[in-house]
Figure (cartoon, rainbow, N blue to C red):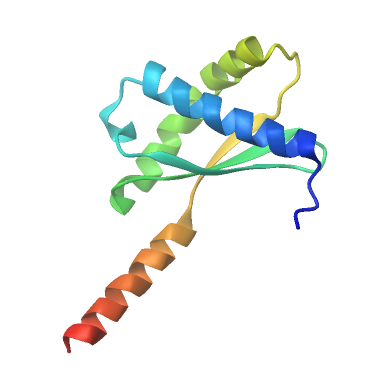
Length: 115
């Protein structure tokens, strides 16, 4: 059972949903194609949010994160406007390595199966 409060869980879900919409609508950048937000984790004091993302190509991870960081003021402003709150967490973007580890394991198992 999660120890998060329902309000915190709702805020995380709202941020994830709204960010996904803003990226699809506002970010006219081909590197964002196929990118998904895998999780939003708020700090204990709700002052920062770690946004984990994953994309189609692991090789483009650094470029993707850099572009998201550059657009974070735009995203923060859009979230404040849509959510009607003056204070929202500072957004930090990170590549979700857990999915890469899972994909590597599947590839390894497939190689073993073919041997």
